[in-house]
Amino acid sequence: MSEKNIHNKHLNDPEKFLFGKGQISWKKSQDEVWNELSLKMNRQPKTEVISLRARILQWSAAAVLILLVGLLGVVSSYHKTVETMPGEHRLVQLTDGSTVELNAASKLSYYPLKWKLERKVKLEGEAYFNVSKGKKFYVVSKEGTTLVLGTSFNVYARDEQYRVTCLTGKVKVSTGRDESVILLPNNHAELEKGKLVVKKMFEVEKAIGWKNSQFFFAGQPLKEVIDEIERQYAVTIQLDPKLNNRNFGSNFSKKHSVEEVLDYVCKPMNLKFVKQSENVYLVVEKS
Image (tube, one colour):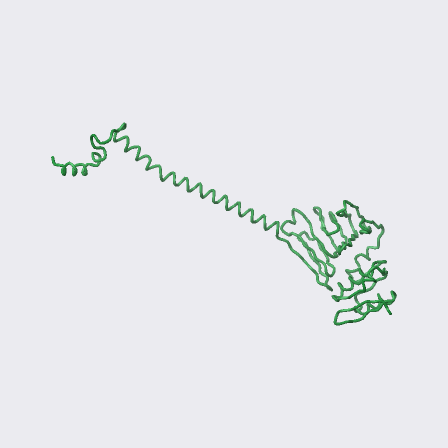
């Protein structure tokens, strides 16, 4: 038989072509080898499917985790701020029905999405609170924290001044100096030279008179009086620094004009005010 005929015969017989005599020494029969190859080929698609399903599960778990972390971040960071301008009062209703009445030039901020976990607000300025019963309620200010369970009270927190008046219920007032006091109805606490001082049987209407546009001052620095007039009338009043610590004791009503109020404050203290421009005044001693 010619070489050409042998070659063609092998091509027509694949098994002999692959497993020709005298070419390769096999330890297994041809049938066994073909069976093993067939099993491996049949297993490959199943392995790929299992791998793909595992990856999909991993991706889904990662996506859920990312979503949960994102939602937690939103809940933790989302806050609401209510701010009043000079001359403005505003009533704010919180998610639990508690109400906060903000005095002029005040700011209240809180986290609505965390409210059921923690009732906490931050206050800069002055506000009257009427708190619904429930979990502890915190009012945090620069100089101290007021803690209540359900009551009505007034908080004044401006600059270095901090005053809390309890009208109903019971409140706990704490400062950053590890001081704390419990206030009952008609009790009042304020910082004096850095220490909390409690006044019992306090005339609470004086602390919340601002709600009815009435302002009471009992021997308070003139600077504090002038600042309040600025807030209530949305004006600028320049006070001679030498007069800052003069004490003023009286009251006035916002039903009067700003110039009538300035005249009322200045006259008994031998002072005068000068109108420099629209809504800008200067208060000095009389010459």
